[in-house]
Length: 81
Image 1 (spheres, rainbow, N blue to C red):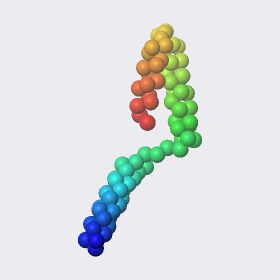
Image 2: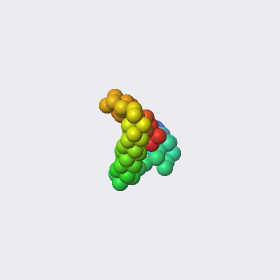
Image 3: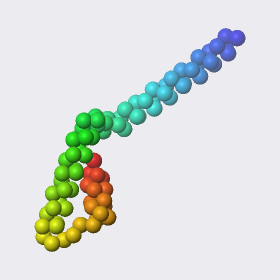
Image 4: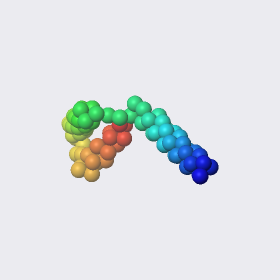
């Protein structure tokens, strides 16, 4: 009975250690990479305005920007996040 209790406590300690390790790894991975809703909105607004300026500049020089090209530019700008 005493050995069974020790084995169960050891198993519990191992699960706790594993959970702590995974939590630490998760925190290290995401450290500094979390954005608030306000930061996402500001980034979206910035990218939208930047894209509008790029398209206006291209069209001012006689190039038509199709919806597909607009979407691709929007996607590429979003990769920098």
